[in-house]
Structure formats: C-alpha cells, structure tokens
Image 1 (cartoon, rainbow, N blue to C red):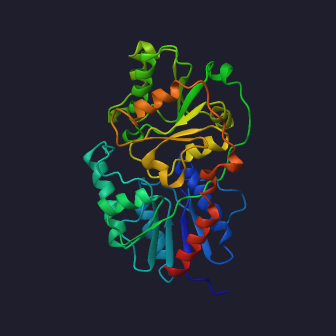
Image 2 (cartoon, rainbow, N blue to C red):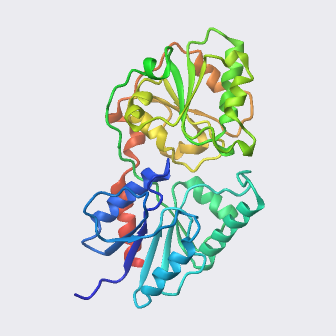
Image 3 (cartoon, one colour):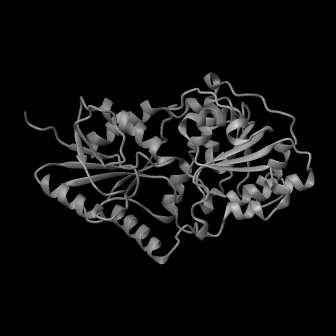
Length: 372
C-alpha cells in the first residue's frame, strides 16, 4: 500500500512533564482520532507512558532539550528523505537544522524573554537558538491564548501564529484522602500547585499571605503549596528558607512538594480557593481548570484567563499589572482571606471548563495537517 502524504510525526516526549504533560496526552488522543485520515507516528522515549498496543512509534533515547536529541532528529529525517513530513512538537525543543522535506508545527506557551528565567548565558543562547530555528524554517506556531500571540508578535515575529487554546480533559479520579492524617491540614486552606519559576510569582503569593496574616492573625485559612517548589532556588527564591525565616508563617504555610496522583483530587476538592499568582502567564492555567472540576473556586491574574473566563461563578480576578493598592494580588488576596467561606462551583455549569474543548483542537490539527 502506498504511504499517505504527509507523514505526521508527533513528539510525545513531554508526556511526564508537570503541566505540558497533560497537554501532550490531549494532543495524543486527538492524533489517535485522526489516524484514519493521516499516517501518524509518535516519537517516544523511556518516560513516555503511552497505552499498550500503540505500535506506530519512533523510539528516541534523548530527553526533550537533552543530549543526543539533535543527532536523533537528523538520523530520523535522513531515513525519511523521500517523504513529505510534518513534525508536530509539543514544545520548542525543535531540530535546529530542518531538511527541506520537513515542515513544522510547534506549541508555544510562554515567551521567556525578559522573565529572568535564564540561569546562565548558555540558557539564553539555547532559547534564542531554538527561536531562530522556528523563524528560519517558517514554522507554524500554536499559541494557546490571545495574550501569548501578542507576546510572540512583540518579541518573536514568527511566520504564522495561530491562537489555539488547548482542550481540557479531567484525568483525576474522584478519590478521597485523609488530608489531616497525611499532611497535617487541619484548617481550611488556599491552594497553589505548580512550578517555582520567577513568572509564577510564588514570592508574591507568600508575601501577600504574610502581610494579610500579620494584619489579622485570626485569619481562618492556611496556605498550601504543592509541586516542584524546592527547585530553582538559584533563581533567587528559596520558599522553604522564606517560610522558616518568618515566625508568623509557622504552622500556617504547608510546603508539600510533589503529591501523588491519588491525592490530587482531594487536595483540590478540600481547598477553599485555588490561587494562580503568576504575573506573566500564557492564558491557560491547567491546575485552575482542575480545581474548578472539583468544585473549588479560583483566583486568577486578569491577564491570565480573562478572555476565557467570566468574573463570578467561582472565578475571581486580581490585576497583575498593579504592584500594590486596589486590585493588586496583595489587596485581593487579603479580601479573599477575610471571607467566611466560598460558594462551591458546579462543574457542569462552569463556562470556563466548557471553553477548553479538545474537539476544537482536533479540528485545528486536521486543518493544519491538510494545509501545510
């Protein structure tokens, strides 16, 4: 049988990553549903936990951005020299030198220029090299929000940028857990789950909570922080040291780090409010959607999801452009902490969840695979 053109190759090696991993799984499901229309293969490595029985895979040994990745790309495309190929990348870990018979689609989440997230000049050089490659090879960029597209246009004017918000699929099982016995959580709490990067503004969240607690020590809510929060202290914020240095936070801030998947639903479900403190975001907060799925209301940066959420119905906003005063994270969080309680969200009626639809992503993928 004559092979179909183009051959679409979807790179799934971001599968185990904290946030992008969930997006990777969603794109994989969309691609599986398109296999009757296109010849699709998947790049995987030892960390890619795709379901058993998927045989149309290309095995790499390298990690995304890892040693040997560029060599594996070159060898792959050399074997496919006679085919028209579309490489669909879930991040910007792309081939720096792309043969003429290969076109590229790449997802872009956050524009890192001027964020301070480059630990060394080498990191900045690598980032700029990948951006140069995407521009040189006229890649089609999928930006996940209007805000992302605006930042791309400002810093990296690519050949083509398409706004394509990712879908959302609930992977959590509704399991209960004794959070008091396991984690010592006795009071109601506000929750953050995510990375410790400068743009995530963990230091701003901690400072806002500390100031509110000092102004009113009788506040009834603790602060719970989960995820790889002990990483990246070389970037200037060591959250453990910051908590230990402030006596007012003792017993009120719980740094849980990574939590197992079987506890995730309960951690979200029993939170009074989920907080996204980021001052630079990509318009798409997956943990916020997970929180809404469990019925927990969310506090978001207005820049973050304003085009995809309506104020009210369990969604609150602060103004990420305000350093202090009315509307700032500090002021809004203090107001939230003074409330006696919050109305739970009905996930079946939540307009935010309804706006993130994988079927729309699949339609965009189909259109691009046919056109490029």
